[in-house]
Structure formats: structure tokens, C-alpha cells
Amino acid sequence: MSSVELPQAARIHLPGETGVWVFILGDMLMFALLFAVFIYYRSQDVGLFAGSQLTLNQTFGAFNTLLLLSSSWFVALGINAARKSLGKISARYFAATFCCALAFVVVKVFEYGEKFNAGIAITTNDFYMYYFMLTGIHLIHVVIGMGVLTFLWHTARSAELNEKNINVLESGASFWHMVDILWIVLFALFYLLR
Amino acid sequence: MDAMSVSRITWVWFALILATGLSWQFGHGFGFGEKFHYATVAILIITFIKVRFVFLDFMELRTAPLSLRLAFEAWAVLVCGTLIFLYWSGI
Image 1 (cartoon, rainbow over the protein chains, first blue to last red):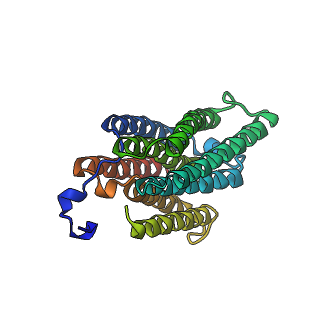
Image 2: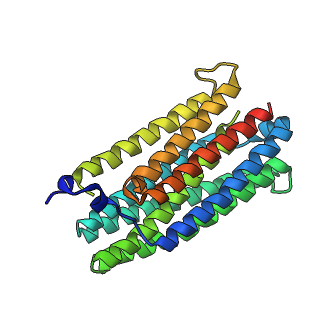
């Protein structure tokens, strides 16, 4: 029977563990609060926030957005390959995702370095406090995600791709997509808002 | 996930890249000129449309249990609405 002939109920599928989704939703609620706090304080001192925003390197921000969007694409393709029992191909997609994540971290290090060299730190003003705090917490998520991606790569490469292992891969993939989503919002708030 | 959805995943990625380019343009004066408040609202709306596509197509919430899909869709709508409200009330 092809998937087209299956009833709607049979196509409902929870990718990954329930606990991972609870964690993702909790993490996203915490970030939602931080986004709102940032916009609220921005509205209290638009001049300071808009002026400080001009010092950010928008090219770095945009490049990192392209990296994370592409990384999410690779992860989705990796899960697709795993479901077809193409473990080695799946592992290659996870490796490509890891490379995107590593490039993101390198760009971020250059970006932070640029600010520190210009004498700008987390204590400079409220804008930079939120900038370093939110992008820093996100960067920690990226680094944790790199550990998760390494595990996904190893699992896809060496383990039998049964239902249980694919469920594990889906859990890690969902976490990585969340990292991408948080950056999509951070990019708009810190680099594009006018 | 079949071959059809692989092509959908790729199209979604392409659309996300294009949407990022459009947001970038709005952030640099394209389309709205001096009315930058409208450009910001457009940027925020595009941002959460992008988020929704990642939810539905990359995270596969399109075929997830309805309650989970609704929780994430509600997150996107509420956060987008709150940010636009807070931004607009500060003008």
C-alpha cells in the first residue's frame, strides 16, 4: 500500500522522543521571553539601540543565517536518507551539518573578536548586554548541537537503522532545527530591525 | 518521507534563502523608503513565516500530532504578535 492510500491517522508521526519536544518547547518559551524583553527595552531607548546596532557586522549575521538554514536542510536530508536505510549517505549529511555549525562558530568568534578589539564588551551598554547574552546563549546551543550532530553521524554510520535508532536521529535533528529557528529570530532582532 | 518530500525540503530551503534576502533588502530601505517602521513589521512577519516553514517541513510538524503542531504554531503567532506590538508601541 502506498502512502497516498493510507488514511490520515496512519500518517500522523511524532518525529523523535516526546521528552525532547517538551524540552524544545520549554527552551523556545524561555527565548520568547528574552526576545520580548529585548524589544521592550529597545522601545525605551531607540536611539541607543539603533545606534549600537549600526556597529554590528551585518554580513557576518547574514552569512551565519545562510549557514544555519543550510545546516537544517542537510539534517532533514540526513533523516530522509536514514529512513531509506542509507546510513552512510545519512552520515555524510550530518557531517555537512557539523561543518556548517563549525563555520558558524568560527564566524561568531571573528565577530566577537571584532567587538572586543573595538573596546566593546557586555558592559558597554544595554544593547550590547542583550546582544552578547542572547547570541552567547544561542552559541552554547550551537556547541551542544555539534556534540549532538557528532552522535547522529556516529549512529547513522555504525548502527543498524531500525525504528529505535531513527527515533534517536529524529530527536537530535529536532534539537538542531530549534537552534536554526532561534537564530532566524535573533538575526532579525539584532541585525535587521530598524 | 518519500522522494517527493525531498524535493519539497529543497524548495523550502531555497524559499528560506530567498526570504532572508528579501528581509535583508527591507532592512536596507528597499520598498518602504523612509517608512522604516513598516519595513520592520514586514521583516518580523517574514521572519515568523520562515520559522513556520522550518516547523512544518524541516521539523515535520505538518504530519505530527495536532496538539504538538498547534503548540508550535501558537508559539510563532504569539511571539510574532507580541514583538510587533512591543515594537509599535515604542514608536
